[in-house]
Image (cartoon, rainbow, N blue to C red; front, side, top):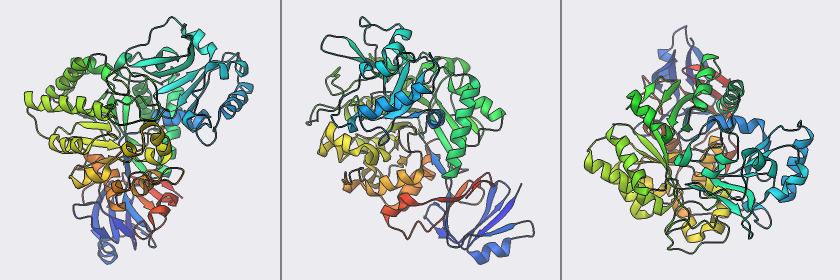
Length: 548
């Protein structure tokens, strides 16, 4: 175990006063002093290695509070269908054709990140766009949102899906004018067309392939190594099932789980959790079980988020219209969904709910309010995952109920132009209203939702500061936040969202020495240059786990 003294830097402590210091002292796993260079050098012993930061920035390790680590690891190893690599159906065909040339017959071709909204005609691709170039290989392409997939005819055949299949609760198949399935599946319909090892029903989308345990471990190892290089030391995986957990357990056993991971079990496991008597977070710093995960509505991109039909919207969203508003809920019985949330609250367990649209927001907030009325509790810290479409009034309700929004401002940059096309400028400008939340005293969190968006923290921070789309359009300038606010949202607030703020999330005496050193001065560069910053060193538990 090593001891370090870091001196002559900009140390962003993220303490209660946002103190900026010069140096920090680490003994083993914990921070033992923070202060001036002179103070830290005076406290050093012969056992400390002194490292001169030379003006670099040192801050708490990033805590990505909504990150699908296993899926990101898989995405690194599969076909990249993301924009701009794939910008048209012709590009899509080329990518699949190239993959087919390197696959044996019957082998799945799978990949991530397709964004058909950015294709020249914005047309949703079909299986007929793929069939002639992949006749011997089943294909599954995951949309950038993670909430819908495109498969070819062979994949449908293997799944036993034909035109007579009914749309499942919380999902739908796209059909043409002749009522023929086109190969495009939304939300819970995804799991009917891909080989999955877990039946999640209407509890959420499932894009977890049925993989050997060794491949899952490789995915985790691959993601952990990439995350440490960009300064991520902890994550919260917001959808863990009996598929992912064995992978995490085995990766931990093999020493390949190097990112502190809090798992949110999907609500289809709620009965099993209840039977086990689990009502609180369990585990250790490296691997733990945290909040229960629920889904309310669909995704912003793809247009299945549930909004009130009170504003004009574009023509690029999913024309599902399964409710009074745009989009739909996963649970067919809203009252049953709300009672499930209330029961989880009653048992003393924290939960997080995927909630995007304002109509969905009221459904969830009404349930939380009723839960507190029936079973008064303090410090519940229920989370709203994404929380991108609340009205100003709903932000006030979030504050009143002590709810924590787990946002992903990277979506404003990566898909902001598409959001305007789907929802219009007025509504899009209010998406991810971080300024309103922070001004109201809400401890909002920023995270990535990787693999859905870039896993790199400076991409996400830049989006929160600038709110510029790929085309350079500023979307919701009034919701921009500052660099120190973004760092707090990515560290202390993220730790607070899973009851971990007492031992990480800020650089204070007694806390774990999880920290990142940035190769520059974050406080003196322009907001536009934040995205170009690189990590010089990452420490976890006081050990150097990455060095440039």
